[in-house]
Length: 340
Length: 122
Image 1 (cartoon, each protein chain N blue to C red):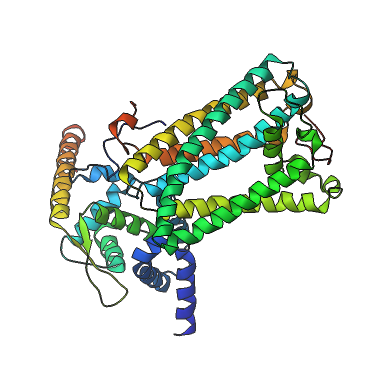
Image 2: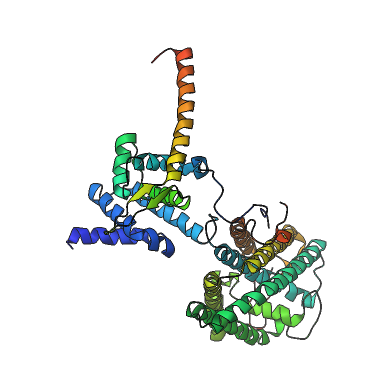
């Protein structure tokens, strides 16, 4: 191949990367040929590059089940699950802060008390729904493992490894912090141990990242946990999404999961409403009950996750049996870590 | 979750209408019109459409419209020995194009008649 042709092929290959793998498998070769012909006629054209990039991104959204009902339902289900899991992780970080504060003193503000009550109930619902969804999916994974389906076994194995690492890590760091509930004090809505576990599992969600000088005083192990735990969390979410996308779920189970996803969405929306109520009562809150910038940023990301879950749900419209188709602050821990 | 009342998870029912293509209705019409006189691959489609309509479809737009047309069964890909894959109209595609162009002609006729009546002949 001549040098200009080689350059053109590399450019075409780079532009093709905007598109998802499944799209490239079907249209990649012919699309690359079209691009090469276009390059020969018009070597530079930023409108063309923008057109390819924007349509590639749209194809990726469609591939994730966000823009099209032409995808298998496992895809929007996995995307909705992932978005709701991201919401749940941030919800745990937010609620852990309030629950830990309540271990020591009651909020003293009807706004915060009401908001914490709403958020706790909503989080309980999300957890219960998550459990109801996880059990049959795990069963399907076990069936796939029994059939020695390597395409499912690999991501499922990674997911299990990441989940175990996160659980052990959170348990380990939970016990290092008597200030987060490990004292045995049992006040408030959430058991102390559970609040401490939630806090430790979301230790990376903190405004201390904006204060490197203070971060430098943290023990090395905690710093490593703060850096590694979100990476492992993202790997866990990615592995779960890939696993679910590679499963071929029975139709009744897809309907059941779609129904659960709808329920989880509404519970998440209720949690977000509670969080917004907490933010609105900011002036009457003190200590750990006082929302900070990081909490505001969490709420924004949670709303984005809700929007993604909603888009995915629109691709799941009508999936399932008829019965499921509905009409229509500052607190410093003993280790010095605080969430602001 | 909102929006749980749709009949199925399949492609939206279209009845052969290009209206369901939304903002891709225009490119889809041009592609079908180009394929009406025989199979063409991507670049040949681009050049033909540019010639008869004065519009150059960008590659991303062209292939989004092609994939939608193929998904609706209005066109089909032919086997090819090289990397350029030609597409041809299906019977459903020919009928959809006929209906769509007839609708457009009706609108054009009404508009031209009214223009002539109010503004005089061109």
